[in-house]
Image (cartoon, rainbow, N blue to C red):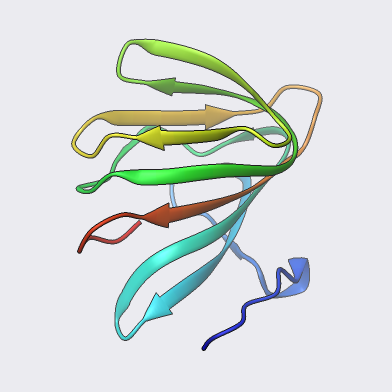
Length: 108
């Protein structure tokens, strides 16, 4: 078993993001999950992941664009993001904390 507790002081800037940090959860060299935090006016940038990813909102609110769809996210929401499609998560006046987990053999 491996336990990862979110500690903002251990978070790294999310590459390609703005006001966005993450803590990776690794299995060997592969990142299988991440703890994601977006501050106010945070932005992950547009990104495509090769595998399906489950996003679970722990706290806060954000907007998510997946392909051509836009959803308003809030605490407790769970979303499956299909692999091979551009995704984009951003915040306005709220912060977001979420867990993203890769399904199957890919990474986040």
